[in-house]
Structures are given as C-alpha cells and as structure tokens.
Amino acid sequence: MGIVVLAFAFLSPLCALSSALFSARVVHHVLLVAVAAPLFALSRPARSTIGVSLPFLQATAALWLWHAPVAYDMALGHMAIFWAMQATLFGSAYLFWRAVFSQPGGSGAGWVFLAYLAMGLLGAILTLAPNAVYATHATAPLLWGLSPLSDQQLGGLVMWMPAGLPFAVWGGMLARRAWREMGELQ
Image (cartoon, helix red, strand yellow):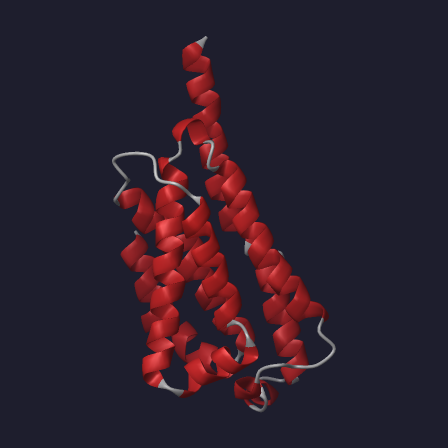
C-alpha cells in the first residue's frame, strides 16, 4: 500500500502541481511522511524495540530544515537537491515510524503526538507569517487565483490541521494496541 501512496505522490498530477503551489507541496510531503513512510514501516517491522529519540529528532530536523526558505527554494530549483529533499524526508520519517511501531504496548503513541506537534507548529508559523517566504512560489499561485501568501497560508493550514488526521489514525492504532495488551494482562 505504501508503494501506491508513493506512486500517487510522484506520478499523479499532484507532483506537477506541487511545483507551482506550496499548498500542493505540503499535501505531497504529508503523503510522504505521514502516510507512505508509516505504511512502509508497518510492512517491515523491527525485530526488536528501537529507540525513538534519535529518529524523532532526525525526522523533525529534516522537516523543519527543508521548509526553511533557502533550502526549500534551492530544492525546487535543482533536481539533485529536490531528490535529496524527498529522500531525507521519507527516509527519516520511515526510521521514525519504524521505531515508533517497535515500542511495546503501543507506548509509541506519545511520540506520534510529538511528531504531529512538530509538523503542526511549523504549519502554524507558515499560516500566521505576515509575508510569503518562498521565492519559488512567488508567481505560479497567481495563475491559480491565489496570492503567494494565501497559497502559503493554505499550505500551512494543511500542515497544521488536516495533516493531523494520519497522525491520529496511527496514534489510535497504537492506543488500541496498548488497550488490547492491557486487557490480555488482566
């Protein structure tokens, strides 16, 4: 199933649209880090418990660093850097989710909440920013009836609110696992 999500992210019109609109790029990144990466992590579970702290820091750093205006604009302007962005976002997210899913008794649910907070905070900052920050999206949103700032705000809102849905699904799955294991102990 993770392959289907990656195919959709990279082979559908969404990928081309995400070159023009920041908001579409956010949807693309949410599919990578919060849908495809956990699906891949579930398909290749860890054989033992893996520490979550380092993968969490790596995934959060990748998300925040690639959304810094200079890095983001550079990635969308150079093919090799673009693929480095995609690989580090997906790879670090995969390692994070694999570690989260390896935690006993669903105790990784707290890490899922922290990961969502990291993404949500970035989304809130982009939503509330007084100016558009990405030069790459300075003109293309106008063709879609959006100002660069409104496109950025829409992308930030997606990162802040709807992106929480896959995190809630994974967190709920882990909470259910914990609840089920607690019931087995009694």
